[in-house]
Amino acid sequence: MNKEKIDKDMIRALAELLDETRLTEIEIEHQGLRVRVARQPGAAAPVMHYAPGAAAPAQTAQPAASENLAAHPGVVTSPMVGTAYLSPEPGATPFIAVGDAVETGQTLFIIEAMKTMNPIAAPRSGKVVRILVTDGHPVEFGEPLAIIE
Amino acid sequence: MTARLPWGYDLIHFEEIDSTMDEARRQAAKGVSGPLWIMADRQTKGRGRRSRTWESGAGNLLCTLLINPGIAAAEAAKLSFLTALCVGETLDHFLGAAHRVRLKWPNDVLLDGRKAAGILLESVSGGGGMTEWLAIGIGINLARHPEPAPASPDAAPSWPAISLRAAGVEPPPAPETALEVLAARFDAWLALWRQQGFAPVRPAWLARAARFGEPIEVRLDKETLPGIFTALDESGALVLTLADGTVRMISAGDVFFPEQH
Image 1 (cartoon, rainbow over the protein chains, first blue to last red):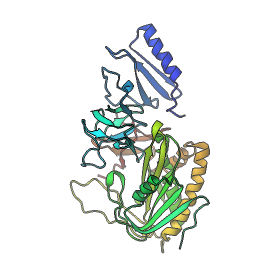
Image 2: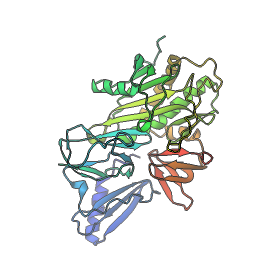
Image 3: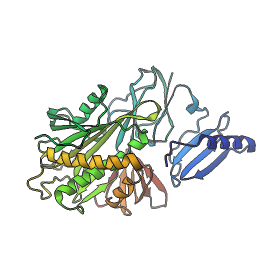
Image 4: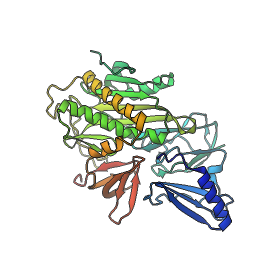
């Protein structure tokens, strides 16, 4: 099953249900894909967390951010589950730092999965205002990596 | 001699180059999308994962396959397993047996329990997470293998190495001959992949997996996890069950066996 093809209608229905019922969280499992729709205190929109596989525990202490970063227009997200690296090799200067100006296509991160290195390129030129991942830590599919404005 | 490859594949053969991965990157930047095999007799900057050096001596196969799979990055990562299978079957061919080669997650190829090959995949994704190109770098120890590095407390633990010659294949195949066998295996497995994706690759890989169902250790950047290698999930992640019953899905890390302390 292709987990990228997440059923948007299903998530939308869950989000509406969340609103209707005034619940703070709904989690369902469907065909090996687990979707949790949760309302963060003080946030207007529900935040989605994806977890690969039914048995995977939520292992990354990923941010109960009080803002919806995934919806930020300058967000760069991870195309896959993997490990994020901020530099081309251990000990080297990181690809980017907060405040840097970047050009479209410039490498921002490397995401490794199954020993496959995936350089993540800047989708647009701009200034790096936030870096949201830690070197060597796991990232989820769709997880915000950086904000470029 | 020039290697004879399956129909539809181009080949560039260098006597010496920085690395076939760097050449693949240059070819891709020129708009070449492959399928293209790049091989070199010698590399001056052979490298592995996270810029570890790869000893690139003469007589070994040093090559990269550049393809344009047009699939999402998460799908392309599973070609790691397909690559390991192709390399494993290439070794089988010259060994004349299949039982000596085992695969260690995700793409290490062990011959008699020693590392006989190195595999490195690099992708570039465009908009929408699609892979523009994928460079699959492969080194196979045919005639020689690196001696163990002198022990140093700072060094990352390394795996003992072996070559086909050291495993008793005398004389070892020429690199061009090994490439012909490898390219044929890739052609067959990629055809299956295009029809059925990861589905047939996963059981074939598991059938040759080292320590499946047994204790292993996974070294991550900042921790080491001992556990039982209980499954390979549909994304290719190693499913590790820890002593307290916690299940971890591993998508990056180095697998070691408990006796390697």
